[in-house]
Each structure stands twice: as structure tokens, then as C-alpha cells.
Image (cartoon, rainbow, N blue to C red; front, top):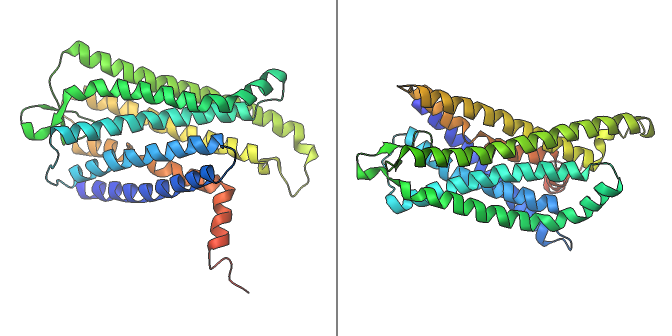
Amino acid sequence: MDITFGIVILIQVGTGISANGFLFLFYIHKICGSYQLSSSDFILAHLTLANTIVLLTGGVLNALEIWSLENFLDDVECKMVMYFYRVARGLSIFSTCFLSIYQAITISPGTPRWTGLKLRLSKFIFSSYLLFWIFTLLLDFGALRFVAGSRNGSRVRITLDFKYCTEVPVSTATTLRNAIVTSLRDLSFVVVMSMASGYMVIVLHRHHRRVRHLHAPGLPPGAMPEVRAAKRVIVLVVFYVLLYGRQTIMFSVLLNRKENSPWLVNSHVAFSVTFSTMSPFLMISSDRRIRALWKRDSPFLNKDP
């Protein structure tokens, strides 16, 4: 059974890193080659970067754990891996949330209030990311003093992170405070992205009814670029929320069990990187620029009849 989970995680890590790496380079190329910064490409580039770091840290180390390979991390290395993993995880949920807010504002009605907000939106993206980077780096940096490599012997494993990293015993109040702050941060982002997605569903429904009779049979409302982008973000958010809910429930189950079965722990580990693995494929399938690039460069699609 452990071998099966190990194979699943290795497949997720391999495909996820490849897809996210391709997307990151694609969006960076678009950003550098454009005279005007694309806000959505900037957000998506951050999301793919976060997904890649999550897979390189959490995915790789959890795969090594399931395959029962020898621990090679000392205290400093373990602190660095845990730090990058937690920062990347925070960046991933922030980027997903920010993308949903951006797309909800983009497809909002053309009233004066919304129009003014749309014009100012791009100016807030860089500053918002800068503030979040500072907040996350400081928040997760404080937890490093409680993390050490498992080579040091009798320390308690961080149950749902890595076997190779252990937790230095601290007071219950400190542990509870850190858990509450992190949970509130994640939960607030999930609530906001859910509200933004719900708003987009309402706007798209109204838009579809309003313009349905204006489109020709060969050009349905769903073919509009902003509608396609909104649908992509909604699917991405729903996927994240479902996985977040499953992870939260499983986290509670594992914490309240006196003895955790290897199957439950391994399944929790396998699902922990699912979003980072699958989300780039959702982005690729819904981005016409990537499909056009593939059709242009594919020797099979360009082959003369």
C-alpha cells in the first residue's frame, strides 16, 4: 500500500512540476514581452511559482518518506524546507483568492463605481502582493524556532507535514496561537474567494440571459474572453475549496485519533499536493493562447494534407 501511495505522489510531483514550470515560463514570457503588464498573467505566474515550490518541498519529501528512504535533513535544512513550504502554501491560497477577486471585478457591470474600481485595480496588485509577502514571511518565520531535523532523536513529529522534520516541544498556548493565526488566514481567504466566485456565477447568469439573443448561433456567450476567464477561475476556486474542506476534515480526524492508520496518513499526504498538481492543467485547458501555441508548433497539427 505504501508503494502505491509513493507511486501516486511521484506521478503528481513529476507532472505537477513540469506543468507548473511550463506555465511559469509562459506567463513570464508574456509579461516580459508585453508593453503593458497583464494583471491576470502576473497573478497566475505567482500561483504557478507557489505550486512549484509546494511540490519541490512537500511533494518530494513526502514521497521520500513513503518510500522509507534515509533522512538527509539536518536542523538548518529542515527549517528551510518547512519555511519555503509554508510560505508557498500561503502564496498559493492568496493567489487563488486574489485571482477570484480580480476576475469578479473585471466582469462586474459597467457602472461608474465599478468602472473606477477597474481602472484602479491594476495599481493595487503589486502593492497587495508586496504586503502579503511581508506578512507571510514574518508569520512563518516565527515558527522556525520550533522546527528541527528528526536526527536529533526524541522529538515529536509534525504529524501532517513531514516525517523528516520534528517539532521541539513548546507550550500548549504557543502551539494553539500559531494554529489559530494560520487557520484564520486560510479560512478568511477561502471565504472571500467563495463569495467572489458566487458573485461571478450571478453576474454570468444575468449576462447570459441579457445577451443570449444578440449572439449568432456559431458564437455562444461562453466564447467571450472574459466569460471564459471567469469560468476558469470559478472552476479553480471550487476545486480548491473542495480540497481545502477535505484536508480540514481529515486533519481533524487525524488529530483526534489516538492511533493513526498508515492509510489515512498516506492518503492525506497524497491529497495535500493535488491542487498544485491539477490546477496548471485547468489553466492550460482554458487558455486559448496556450492552445494556439500548441497548434502552431505541433508538427502533427501543421502537417500538410
